Length: 258
Image (spheres, rainbow, N blue to C red):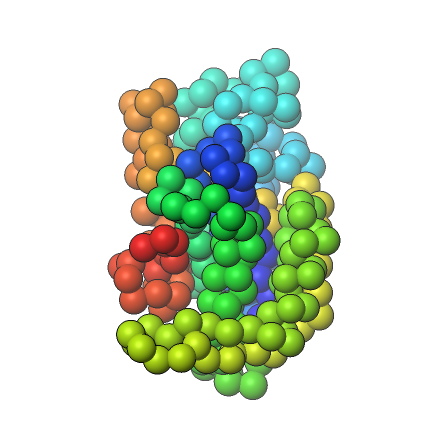
């Protein structure tokens, strides 16, 4: 069984508050779950000692970067360079977790030309289909009989559940070859409905949040972060990116529209 922990960056509105809608997921096989979790715990203990951050504090990208919540300087005592150094150390550690893979879908909302397009549905359809493809090919452990479970942050629970059920029963995928009819590829490897989690309760989901935000700021850099090289942070994760997710991007990022 493969488990995927997912979070989003940006919003699915058109035009919305951001020019992007990103979905990032951390995939781990059940046989590696305990080992990876222990490594997360060890990482949190190390970072706690180094940055004096209590282990109970959740790692949320926006809070770390902007100094909000528990990462406000009056709470954490950290300067912005220190917070960004903390962020970088987390990604550098994650890049060494050979047991995980990172799946990313990036909707370029500025390139969506039809106002009736449902960005949320398109983005999640691409994401779920890529996870299905990954499972059908046996995953990185080459186990073709494995299925998967989807864990999400608590956002849009109802529409995501409806989409998952529809894809399981009625999922037509356009052919990559011009003139060919769409194929019906039921999502039969992703079991049950998506399981919502409160991200502050899950190290796995928090990691997905940090990945999604780093990707957003790589492709849409924030001027105030350029002096820290933050636009390069996402590339640290190259060793564990799911490059098989698409042939159109060397890092496997599923961009839509192309």
